[in-house]
Length: 485
Image (spheres, one colour):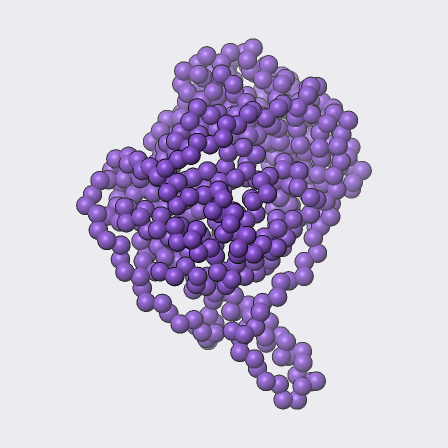
């Protein structure tokens, strides 16, 4: 199979439809000046990127060391806030599950109000809250109306929750039971089980390979003193980043961020745990027997962290290879509903993970096919057509990153976390500047055709050859247009 082919049919149809609309608009505007216009072939036109005016990002650092990013947006009378701490499970030390336990205890009320009273206070104000934890950070989100009579009491409750956690004995019991339940669910979930095995193989002995929720034994050993000590170390203002988007002035955002930071514990930012270089891995496949109608296939190898100079090239390579896999396995052979391919944003180890569900009789054939396609991809690199399609797609998608407060909040959290330039198009501009030769070279520097650690979860059945590819269809402008009504 030749990898240097255009994007799948559905993607090109959308592209051609957009081009046709642009062509009609152009002809309408120039009809008066051109008495006998001649239509150029639509396939010869080069799509142009929309002109997008990106919101300005303001940033400042508080006296405590907290970095704050802010975008002023008055489209809605609301604001969104996220405060993140370098307090992920990689800070657990010898007590796996410690960070997750502390994070969950914030849901159990403050030192002044129990969980019900705190929840009722937020509900009366119409405030939406959220929190979460990953390997590298914990975070809390708040969405509220921006009117002072709502914003001020909402921030008062939010600050109380973060600055004066209860850590009651009853709360600890409930949280540990919840984490034990989550561990049991992960043990029965094929995706969680496969991911755990892959991380164990790629990063043996490292904190990143451990479950965020610890183990039943480690959770039992965590005591009150450990919880309080972790909170005082990890939830300091210096260890925090604040992102604010919405209907506030710069002065209001500065006041809000300062009040929040002032209430947090004092202390230095935590140092990031030292990450051992991922060992060189050769292809390894593990099968887990499971009574299911389909087989989960998951495969991964170590990539590069987000701050790495080759990150943009590897990211672009991932996008294009994902299109290749979906074109071959989903569109041409119809053996899966879709292939997921992703590299997480991370300061430490960042695996490239590919996963799909397929009929069990094709699991080994699908695994071999992906490896063969990847080997060919490393050898040939992307084509100019593939790279241009990705660049145009990213340009058209750029407005989505600023379409709402939530989108901007999520982008700002990444910009701040990885100390990127204060613009929403930074990652986009990195990829726009890449050549196919640069992408091919970066892929071959960090990835190997035989470097995949693979896990299959499903029944052990007699394997069959993959179906032959469906004959390619000719894409025309007419085939992309809706039927006349």
